[in-house]
Length: 325
Image (cartoon, rainbow, N blue to C red):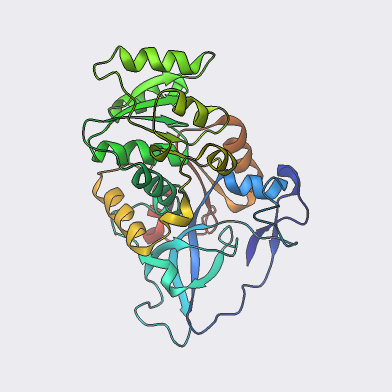
């Protein structure tokens, strides 16, 4: 099969697509033919070595956690899955950016029929991270929650999960995504100098005058800005784990949100249209470098997704929805 590999830490140019053997299928494993696999900023940081202390790579390294596809084969002890079943789930082995991936059966849930493939393959990392972050600050109806990095993969989910809880969202994001944020009922707050003071004035001038919680998906100064706004540390959640340790804030993410029930809930919300899975672009596996260049340099709205088994002439008419998704 074809799979993404890199043999040393580095920039996008260390990524390649190679012929590899799928790992042997254990008795409780499922082999999935991957139709869609989202890419994530954390994978770029692992590739550069920025996360070596916490998430070291063993070379040659595969890549990818998100996955959606169809069951190709099952281990001898697997019950409940049969070849052809549509599934989504996750890999903890950095292996989903490939045509096939073997994962434990308990890391998969059934894909709802109405959920497009690309959306299904983009749900796990960003969706579970957003779910855990929102749960960590426990927003109540009518409260004001500030979200930095509000239109990235995680932030776009968090904005919508907050809306479902009837919180008021102040979204720190690029002005080019204003239309999408307004469609979600969020108030745009643009990047720029003097963020803390500008945020304070904006919040005070709009009714309640208080920021009750803060979700940081951007990093940098935002955890400190949250505290300067008077948000209690227990209601600040950041993915900057060093800042969280130094400032005493919360730092819940994908590890805390990884649960089959959570993923099934997110898939149901997306399939029913209660939340949207914004897809910026999709790429064939061979264009993995271009996919990461778009993610890392263009700061797109929502998710970037690889379609490992979708190439011109490679799909049957009945599988055309894989591309449409």
